Each structure stands twice: as structure tokens, then as C-alpha cells.
Amino acid sequence: MKHDPQRWKEDYERDGYLVVEDAVDADTLARLRIGIEDITADPDSLPPALKRFVNFERDYMKERPALNDLSADDVGNAVRNIMELPRFAPLFGEFILYAPLLDILEALFESSEFHFHNYKCIVKAPRVSSRFCWHRDLPYLEHSTSNLITAMVCLDPMTAANGATVVLPGSHRLVGETSNPKDTDIAEEDLPAGDRVLVTCPAGSIVLFHVNIVHGGGANRSDIPRRNVIGIWSGPDTYPIKGHRYHYQGLYPRSTDPARQKQVRLSLPHL
Ligand SMILES: O=C(O)CCC(=O)C(=O)O
Image (cartoon, rainbow, N blue to C red):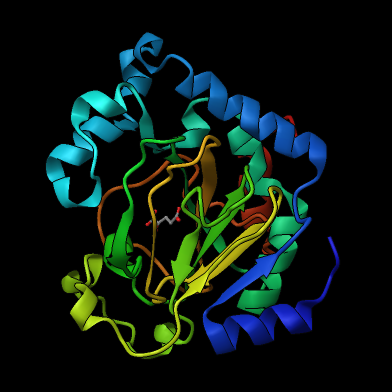
């Protein structure tokens, strides 16, 4: 990865998103892919305690039929989203400490005092995935400020054909700290004016965006999967306002506070 904190910060501030190519080394990328394939190959064989974190395309289609032109029979057992990745395998917990990602986050937050919220994997399964509606992430996250970053680690190339994310650059600046429930599904006619950018990039890239940027994305009708391991990271003095907590939520992997450092060491002792 080419270190370019000034470019990272400028892109992020101006556009609300940033693409860093070559951010994940080949070995880590291969291990993440295997970790996800272990879950998606036969999700029905997962123990119930884990299967409850796997969301299937067919169930999503019942809730949001307008986002897929196929029938539930067509999509079979395709997985759409896996929540709580660190519960599935140690490698996903260890990935909270992945240094290149932490370097980028530290530059964007301009602080070492940022913390982990959660890891999930969005799977756009070959040929059958739904598209994504236009939305902002903030209303889903319910924090005391909007200083949160979504970091998408691309396990596959993102292309037009496999449903690359589409962003509206600058749209993160149009709203403030308070989330609007309507932002979870923004109708085409209510979208802010401006460009729509298809975020295409090679596998191993990390795409980071402000949780107030408007984004969406097409269905995957290609023959290759489009899988993004997605982390949410909270900035300094930014805290959840609801009771629910995720696995390892609240770890501060770059903190200079000895008590926080001890928390990381005790949480992931083998590292
Ligand atoms: O995977 C993507 O393209 C975007 C994911 C997303 O918008 C979300 O999980 O809220």
C-alpha cells in the first residue's frame, strides 16, 4: 500500500469517500476469502448460534421485492449478509488489528482514539443478488455523533457487472449529526443533485466512506461474487446510544491510553 495520508484526508473530506488500492496483502486477502467461503459454501450446516447471523437473499427479497427482478426460487441458498464475523472465526477478530487499515483510519480520524464497532460481510452472489437501495449508513448506527467511517475491504474486484457500490460524492456534507430514519431508503426523486460515481477497484482495495454519504449499488448478474468485509469504526468521543453491543465492539486498537491498550491485549491475547 502506498502511504499517502494527505491524499486520503483530502479525498475523504471533499468527496466523503476514498479508495485505497493494494491495501490488503495477498496472504490476508486469501485467508479472508477462505473464511467467508467457509460460511457461504454450506450455510445450512452452521450451528444455530452462528446461522442466526446469516441473512439469505431469499428472505431479503420477501422484505424488499422491488430490489430484485428474480424469484425466490431463482436465488436458492444465496447468502446476502453475514453479521458478527468475529464470532465465526478468530481471523476476523484478528483483522480488527490489521495495520494498513488502522493507518488509514488514524489519518482520516486525525486521532489514535478511534474504536471498532462491528464487522459484517455483504455478499453480492453471482447472477442472483439484489441491488442496494440508496441510503445513508448513519441511521442504522445510532451514535452520539456522526463521526463514523464505513470501511469496505474488497475481497473481489468491484465492477459495474458485479454490483460495485455507487456513491454520491459530497452528499455527506448535506446533513448534520442527527440521523433521519428516511435516509435508510431514499427514493430516486429525492436524491440530491450531483454526480453518481461507480466505485470500481481491484480486489484487495479498501473503500472508506463517511456514514452520511448517500450510496447504493446494482445487482450482481455476473459470474463472479462481489464480497466486501465491512467494518464500522467510531471516531474519538463518539459512542453508541442504544443498548445493543457487537462482538469486540469498543476496542481501541491504536489508543495511547494504557488502559485501552491493556483491553486490546487481553481481548486478543495471542496477538
Ligand atoms: O456493499 C456495498 O456496496 C454497500 C453496503 C451497504 O451499503 C451497507 O451495508 O449498508
